[in-house]
Length: 317
Image 1 (cartoon, rainbow, N blue to C red):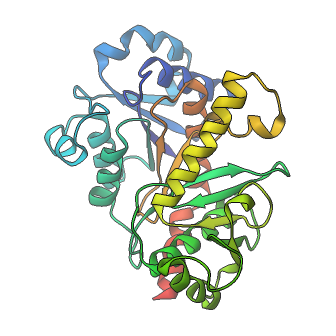
Image 2: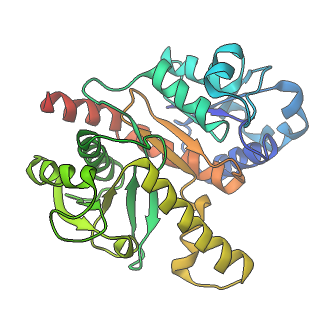
């Protein structure tokens, strides 16, 4: 298994990226996992001593260009072919690496995913998903959380399908429960999108649909998967992040449930529905987040998730 990592991506790269790689290699002795580090030689040279002991377990690829967070995604991706993001997707498309992760420009990552790797046949739109903590100590999956602000009912059904396969394959959740995020529990509630999506989810095969869920259900065990358009999902995700910031970081409250809101636990957000494993990290990713991104993307590769997606949507067709 060969995992590509853009070590120039993120506000605190390359130091935090290298520290995350070092932590992963130190704590994971599986030599079948090889890392391909993509970045600017001059920028990373002061920190390479941190991983000197693991030289046999990684390869370094020089990428002289960097896409900054404020650059236009499509323009930057095209005009900076020697950036870590562009080179990473190029290598992924040519099967030189098995997966790719970056905490860099989210828009550029999505451009690469859509145009270099492309969606799986039968998938109308890829989606990004985020784990949200539950009061029982487990986690649920919320999707979409940002790349599909406007959706059709058919898109939400496919998000439910992608999320179900992901939880079954990668997280060992048997027959995960799917709920439609809405403003009421009763059938017929909500806006036009929600009203049109409900019967489609109800009739869909291979989806364990349990009905509507309200915002107050998100941190409970009503469902394993909550589906919504990216506009709603992103607002909910950012609200959850603010809960952690206010109560944990600003007020210093210690609570096991609250601790699970820390984005570093999840590492990054997987892009579901494309032809190769890709994970997008938070722009403020720390070493811990990079470590967990690598760990989680390795689980996705090992689970043969992409093949499971292809089989699922081939059956649907």
